[in-house]
Length: 215
Image (tube, rainbow, N blue to C red; front, side):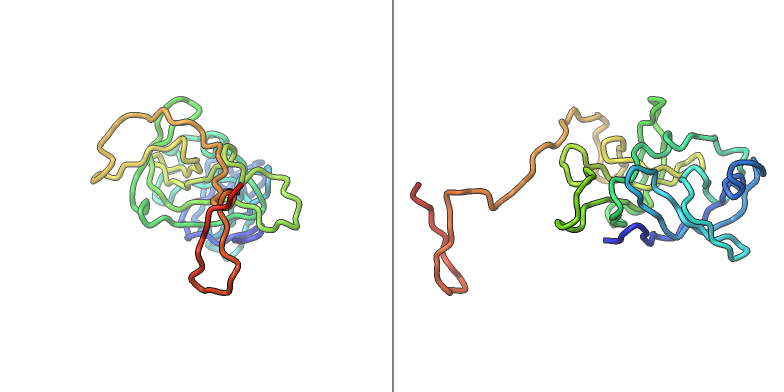
């Protein structure tokens, strides 16, 4: 697990040039770039690092700064950052995973506008707390608070970062039902070592026995 910065699978994209000028000019213009990493700061949106064709690198831009390569900027709907990414980073310790099962599959997420937005899975950002000797002031490991961010290349040319409970995936050979489940938020911390009725035998045997305690 990385601290602060993490590598990601590279994304060939276009950057909106106004983000290179603090949103002050060059609106509507783009240039090609390669997104290669992220910064995760608790309480801020996931921030992205990109290199331009001139070799210059720009750090810590929001997901709304980018559109997919091959799209005409005028054809890509302009969306607020909070429409593309629902939650901020949950800690300074991000983990980047490309889930093989989801790779190349498409999905859809329900946005703040109550509409479905379709896209293709790229990879996943998740968070945790790394060290019990560091004060845990975030909530990345609280069951009912935890969220990951699946990164999607949307059909409209934008990118999005959405959690599990906003996305329905399309795996043609398996996802044959069309209902939205009425599941409840997971609140249990699962622990197999909190059963006070069992103990191991007090010997040096490799294959030790377990016995039920008389309470």
